Image (cartoon, rainbow, N blue to C red; front, side):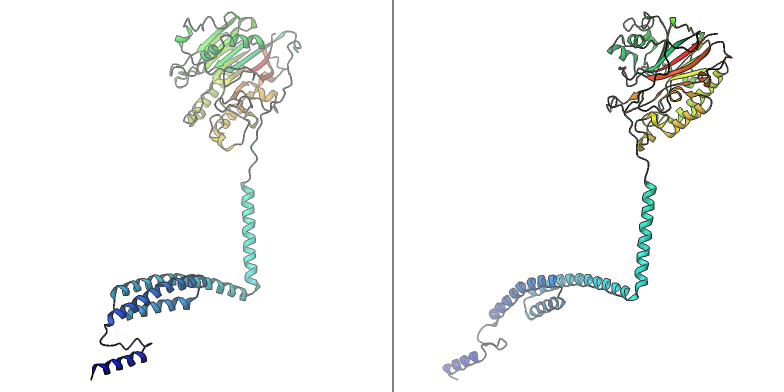
Length: 463
């Protein structure tokens, strides 16, 4: 066939099959056309598929999602290029994964709706059961809440005005006189005198103190005879006092007690002794005993249980019990008064914030220490201040300096006078010399320590 005829036939064929991609001319290479179609189809799939996927995710249209996946796979399978096939397979996997997640969520929603429908069809009994359970649960929660409620924590910082119970000029007996005893934890005698060399002299002069008992002096024997410190033979010597010291030999600068007795008070001790007579208690200089005519005075610095309560068991199980046995033995010879820093806030009014949770783990406020002190009182002794002023509030003897508690009066009552019951009997004529407790109070204005002095006024009745 001539060349011109062939060209005419090809032109007619192309015109007839212009829109048909299946038939192709043998003379023209088919690969370029196929590649163009593949590229166009693939690009179209990439552009359309994300849009339909987004629409499907928003509208929850399952058919659109399935359609998109099948269309991509069909186009990819008709292509002869293997890289396009792999990418299409990956696309299918990702889409199917998301589709499964979507189907699961919808199934869970359908289950919930079905359960709700079934519950509604069951009738009113099921609903009433649910309401009853919810009401009982609410009542149980209310009961639990009620049980957890505790009494509010007190905060007593206002100091009550104490009535004056004893007037020195109005003694009830003609053959009696008033004796004032003061106890003070100085938290270091040398420190007090360094700040104010006349601190003790001023105290005894202003308040007419006859017997001054100190605790936590923190001095050793070498300090007493140091000419620079001027303690033994100097301190209150000019004021007419005799001094008695007990020093710690277990540790330097630790514990220690002292007693100063005014010679003009009419009382001279018949005997002075130191310690409880037990080696395990007597190495820290915590006890001085003075036996007077008519009564015995025991100056005490009771061991502190420590910040971590590491001495709590020793304090309550050994010291307190041995001290009680010692005092009861002394009672056989006559009435006994024990005083000093007893390191316990016994009753609610003895701590400004009694009831706070942390107090049960604080030295001096633990249930064990308070119970131990109560056991000592139950054995036959009386807390003089609380007996004379049972409802007094805000009267403390200790304030934390670290917390700055002194000015706002957030304190504890740790310093006591504990007496034999005969100190409160005015009609007892059996003794040759009688001692009656008339009044007790604190001197909070006295500075120099984290404690303040406490005072007990006694009426000494001679035969």
